[in-house]
Every structure is written in structure tokens, then in C-alpha cells.
Length: 136
View 1 (cartoon, helix red, strand yellow):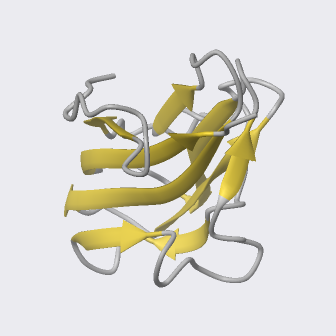
View 2 (cartoon, rainbow, N blue to C red):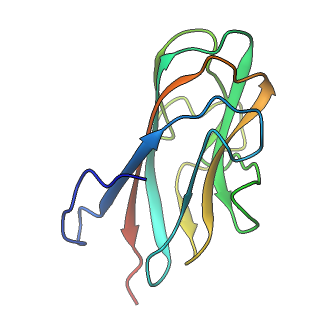
């Protein structure tokens, strides 16, 4: 996980990012754990696909309290990542229906990205996630 913005926590929150992994295992395309002292609001997730999968594949991204090896679709649901390269987000084109767009993530809980259907072989790209601390 790489922090590309070391801004103060305030209205701007914080960005984290990393590389996508071509994996069919739940939560393995990418995962992030909330290491803050309390809950955070994840308000933006971007998946920048620079090389699409070699066969049909859809992507889920979402919150889970279970583990980094668990699939969830609360942010992006069923995004086609084989049709074309591009930047996909929870802010637009969230997929097929279950995504809510913004989630609260408790301390020590997770955002995961998983293959929903098909196979993720050949996938290359980056992910970017923005969050804000929940204030008491």
C-alpha cells in the first residue's frame, strides 16, 4: 500500500493506492485494511485498468468486516473489466445494482476487490481509495 498524499486529516481526508493483482481469489485483486484509530468513510474508489483481462471478467469492490479474503460489492458491483481499458469508479458506473457508493469502515475492517464472474488473468492497473476519518 502506498500513500501518495500526506495531507492533514480534515475536509480532504487521505488517499491510498496500489497495484491491481490478476487473481481469481476473493479479495485478491486488491484489499485495504483500515489502520486508523477509528472508523472512516470511504467516499471514492478508482480502478484504473491499463491492461484488460484476457477473457470475460467482472469486478466487485466493497466493504467487508470478515477478512481480506472476502468478496463484497457495496462500492462497485459487476464492473466489466474485459470490454475496454479505463478508469472505473464508485462515483459513476458502479455496475449492476448492489453498490451503495459510500461506506463506513470500522477500525481493522476491509475494502476488497474481487473477480465476480469470469477470470482476472491478464489484468494490469492501479487502484486508488479516498477516505475521511469519522469524527466523534
